[in-house]
Each structure stands twice: as C-alpha cells, then as structure tokens.
Image (tube, rainbow, N blue to C red; front, side):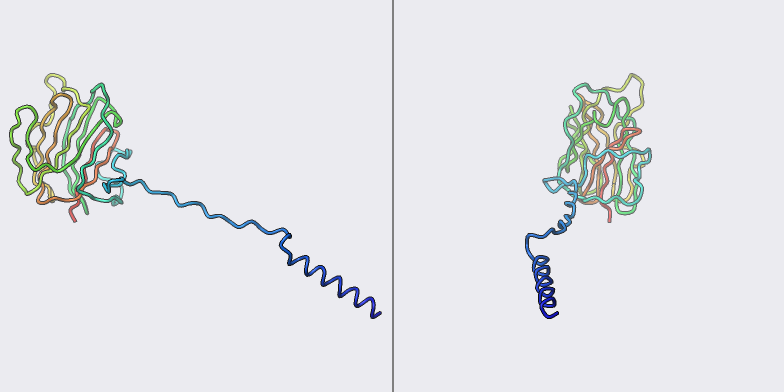
Length: 211
C-alpha cells in the first residue's frame, strides 16, 4: 500500500512539472487594431480642407469639427478645360463661424480650383483697381476653372448686396478674367478660416471663425 502511494505521488509531481513547462500550448495574445489617423494639413492648415460634403444646404448638420487657421490654403489645379460659371455669392452667420458660399454651375467639384489667403492690398484683375472694403483685414478667394458666362446671363459682380453678416463687413466679386475670378471678404480682424467643397450644386464654402 505504501509503495502504491509513493508511485501515485511521483506521477502527480511529473504531471505538475509538465504543466508548468515552457513547451506547453499557450493562448495567443490579443492585438488591438492600430488607431486610424485623422486627415490634417501638413503645414498646420485647416482639417479636411478639400473634402466634398453632400447635401443641398449651405449650413452643415451640427457644428463642424474643424481647425480654423489663417494660413493660405488651396486645392489641386483646376480642370484644364474651364466649364464653370459663378452664379451666386451669399453670406450667412452661424454659431461659431460666418460662412461665405460661392455657388457654381456647368461642372463638378473636381473641376474647380481655389486658393484662399489674406491680402494686404486687394486689387481687381486686369485694371488693378483697389478694392476698398470696411474692416481691418481682407480674405481673398481665387476660383479657377471658370469660363465666361453666356451672353445676357446674370452673374455676381462688384459689392454683393446684404453681404455684411457677423464679423464679415462686406464681400466684393471680381468677375472671371482669363479663367479665374476673385472674391474679396472684408473682416473686422484677421481670423482663422476653413474651406470645403459642397456638391448638389457645386459650391465653395469658406467658414470664418467668429467666436
């Protein structure tokens, strides 16, 4: 009886050692997925400045999560075959930002080129006349990929009526010349801005921080 107890104990010891050895099967460690990077400008400019957002409303659903910056920003070059015409420029004020919308027809968002930057000496194309808007800062929106409007068509030109909203003191449209137009935005002060493309219809939206 004693011998059998000794053998049983020895067998139990062997099983215990085998279970603790390094050669046994182990469950693989779980690996968490890598975080998804966010889209941002390498130069510190606004987030998602070239995204296309669907919908027909000028105001986005909810408050946009963007970074407002005063650095120049632009898209890739416009289509080599200009087709677009500016049909309307309008201004609205929302919680946290003022929005200027440049609406176009005759093409699609991927055919439009634009550049937005502050301009200390705003002047018209061709003649070089001085553009005088109230306020202490002027934001210039250059729109490329444009063609001349059809004869008799109504397109914005000069000071836009009722364009003073929020911190925007006025908007002046310098019509198309050699494939591009300029929209000058007068402001009470230099402020951060964010630019996006909207479709249905094609629009450039410039949001200017007003908080």
